[in-house]
Image 1: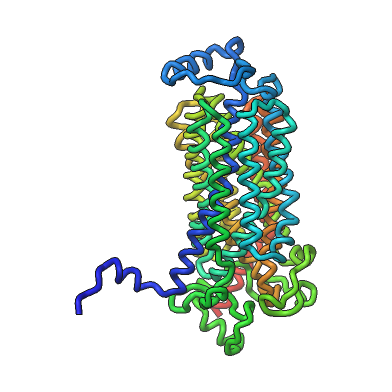
Image 2: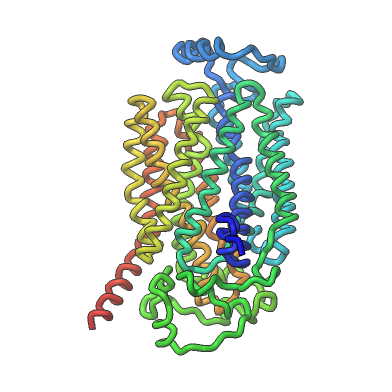
Length: 528
């Protein structure tokens, strides 16, 4: 018998379950990347909606003249002023652009609290598909204002509000789906890699929007809208919510050093082990991903959180029941300030680069993607460290502690030249997005499958929505504050971001102390 080709041997070396898991991992990655891809254009187009008038800024004028000489003239709508697109061509343009950010993010924050509750009562595939199609429509609707020559501020605000509401369908859905397919073992690393979809989506969104921003900014919104709508159709055709839907095993293979993610929570009958046998049989990586030691965790009465059992037989968790899960409130408030910093960069970084480096909108948009490149490495690094140390809160705290002085350095060094800006963008992106990525993925999944839930698999969507919804309040406030503060100087914006990082760290102090005390008790127990 002839030897099988190397490629075929590679394919057959993985089991059917492993291929399905890899498929769901990749599909949910692409689905949520398309959400962030459709959010990014507004930050790129800001530099085009308001241009620096010739009478006010001679340096910028010379730069734009040099750039204009390199491109072919493009016919613009008749009533576009020299200062940009009406009504954003006024002196209060920063406040108006901030209002666009605030309208989207405020709607997103409010909608997120409802989205998780609704999402766990509906099939994920249908819920996510409808949300993606609607998001595609409202994203493209903003860009249609260019083609139909619309200059009414409320048209753009309403498009942002509607888009913010429908985009809340994405995060609880994909996190619930990925949580169903993957257990707790090395969850930080797996979800750190998976969460890079945020940065990948931002990068692709920036590049796509920047390609048309200087010639036809309407397409900077229409094309991302088409992409997310197409991905919505892909979701409807291919998304598998749960392993049991395709007769896959509900837990990863025990031989792969991954955590057996509580088969009992999905109704599987398994032999019962006593506490001593269980602790001995588990791999060290499987234990204490959140604080699970008996002396350090808060035990809830099962009746106060969930009732019933089994995946379809379990009643959905209440909002107050989810808040009683140990760590949900602390991580939610921490994410509020961490996301405030991250989204301020998301929406204002290209404009900041335009003002400081005196670059055109396209080049500023391209350069801003380096912040997201740093975010990819930051998310993966945070997940890897938290898995090794078995301390989620301490990992977040360490990165937040480093982020505050890094932001100060960024505000000072970025004015020294383009090379310094590139380096600081990468470092800042890693430290700012690392805690944000860890909390919204691995921590949310850990808390959504916490032992106090007594096996309720339907709580994950609500817990995820509470954490990300609270974070989205900060995401709404951050860009708004940036719009209000920036006229007094960009340095003041960075001071505001540093204070936010310090507040995020403050809310984690109790959990960090708890982790360290738990680790000290565990070490003392081993010595005896």
